[in-house]
Amino acid sequence: MKLVGFLLVLLPVIAVLAILGKRQISHNKDGSWLVPKLAGRLQKLEVLYGRALEDATGQYMEQRFRHFMAGLGILWILGVGILLLPAGDQDSGQIRRPEAGEDATGISVQLTDGEQTTEFTLEVEARSMTKAEFTDAVNDAVKMLETEIPGRNRSLDYVTEDLSFPDRDSTGRLEISWDTDDLAVIGRNGTVRRDELEKACEVTITAKLGDGIRTEEASFRAKVIPKTETETAIEKALRTLSQMEESGRKEAVFQLPEQVEGVAVKEQKISGREMICKVYPILILAAGAVFLLHESKEKEKLKGREERLSAVFYRFVKRLTLLLGAGESLQDSLLTAAAVEERFLTREVLYAVNRIRTGTAESKAYAELGRGLGLQSYVRLFSTISTAAPRGSSQLLNLLEQEVKDAEAEAKETARRRGEQASQKLLLPMFLLLIVVIGIVLYPAIAGM
Image (cartoon, rainbow, N blue to C red; front, side, top):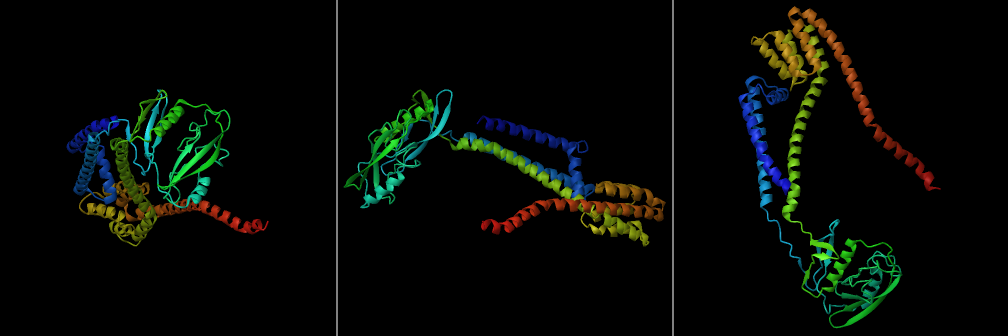
């Protein structure tokens, strides 16, 4: 609850800081590190420049800001709703016992002795009935009880765990009530108490089967093995509490005591408010995870762009060299060669050529084109073009031929590395396949032994 209150105070502070940051960015766009970063990302992914890039950046930031503020608002409203939820019912200690014929009620109880706290589920059984419906299959019910009473024990001759005392037979038409000749060792609900035993003890168990008119008894002998371990305060309190519940089954209400054997007793209730309080911080973490996932996808897009540009670099340089060697102009050659990658490379080259045709210096346009593409190979290529283009096509063609050789060698090296990576990924499937083949070969020999 305190964590929710702290987050409710923190979220408005974050919202105010976000608003102030947005205003500062709006008044001083050039001085903010965020705007150039977003603009650079959009420029690479969408190939935008000038006013179009500025508008796209503004719209992107405005959209992200609205999503961020909406998320903060939703989290804040949810937190307020959590605090306004009722804290739950007051602990009165009164537990309604089920009516006759109803299923038992399980309540969560907390035991505290000042040093140790234990939580467990206490079964509050239904009020005892005098008679219950029976069927004519009493003998079948007795046979069923002979196998079911031992429960997790190996037999009734060696009892170390609680016994199973069903309140009905397998058909559901018979009601069974239980009694023993030593309730201190085996209770009417099958609870085995062997902590104070010094030697093995034989107990007679009596099952009363009735149909409301007739009653018939069946007896079973159980041998309880003593327990040598000492009993803790919590275990002793649990045993006493179970005895109190058992002895008060004729009452309509079971009063949970505040203390048993020096151990504090409290019914453990989990309200919906507490449950949501535990989930609320997780929602905030989930919102942060969504934001990080979105950023990760943006980075994946940039990585995909770089991989596509890198993959077509060799073909682009080779085409450009062939076209220049055939006598075409540099600008036309660039446009034709850039068609190998229509989304990014073609649009970037087209923008640079249009700038040159509208008056921008060739050296400046080509250098900025290389920096805009971002990869070192393109930066080197267009730096060479910006330097050699004013000196003549022959010198540029010689430099490009050398660039083709370097690009070809780099492409072969990249292909080799990818082949090695692919072969490494295939090692595990090949190893598993080898194991399967060895198993198929050895199976006939092993089966024939």
